[in-house]
Amino acid sequence: MTSKKNSSEPWFTSQSSQVSRLAVLLKRLESEAASLPKSSSLFKIRDIRKLNVTFEEAKNEIELIPNIQVDMSKLQKYFVSNVTDEILSSRVFNVETFTDIDNEIKTFVDKLHEVILNGAQTEDTNGITATFVNDLLRVANLDRYPSMITNYPKNELVINGQDTISARPGFVVIVKNHILISIEEERLNNITIPTGYGESQIGVEILACAYNNLRKLGAANYRDQTIFAMRVISAYVTFYKAVIPAEYWNELDEGLPKEKIVRVIRWPAINGLRSGYYLGNLEGRQKVLSSLAKIREFLILEKL
Image 1 (cartoon, rainbow, N blue to C red):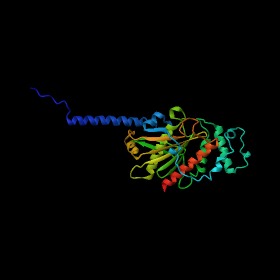
Image 2 (image 1 turned 30 degrees about the horizontal axis):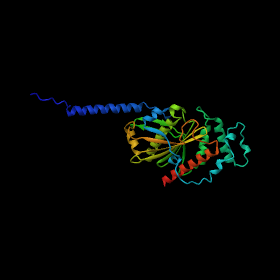
Image 3 (image 1 turned 180 degrees about the vertical axis):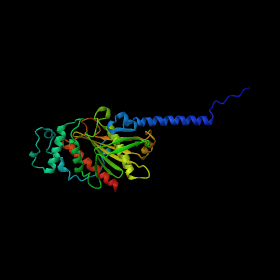
Image 4 (image 1 turned 120 degrees about the vertical axis):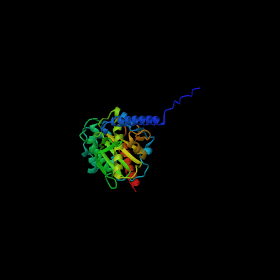
């Protein structure tokens, strides 16, 4: 009677196979990371998905914008209720006709007129939108201690300790573990459907700013971070919010993340070239300024 031959592999052969499979997997992950664009401005939806970043509609405004009471008394003058979209979009617009507003508000209105007249272009707009956004953030006191605006900071996202993606958003406000990023149309390289109207670029810039902030904090361990972002295309403003879990960075240190997801929510919910709060009308200005004021208050309260 012949004994049955044991078909199982010797333990050393089995271990060797596992090591080989692991090496193949790691090589594939490294190759996927290396295949990503080296600049955030070149990212498309398919690229941002590889980083496990998803964009979703917020259920309501409160899910994204902090539900905080803020004093709007100093901002109300920027609502300029008598300035309509029809007036702002007129080619014969003349700010001098507004005798009931001071010179500071006249400058704000005049710049808004230039933005609206310029339209939702995807080409170079000579910095018109960026100039207005810069003023908008300062009107909302985001350049007042403890918050501070940094213009066009250079950030890098590092994957697996070697693959680097550069990002340069328009304006960044950082208060400890919380960040507000503002990205206007001049900084969005490709406002088209394949990029989610710039959302793929925004996703990378959220990660890059958060990554660089962690390095500056010099913490012994990774920590959760809350990131707000504001996209401005012509006079249309959309807000975003992401909470990046500490574990996400641990995965990124080893390659492309496979389990942890960065969920970015959007409000107003619809995404498009002409979606969001429209600064050409009173309600849009009220919503944008109150949202910025609430975000600033959130940043400050979280610091205390």
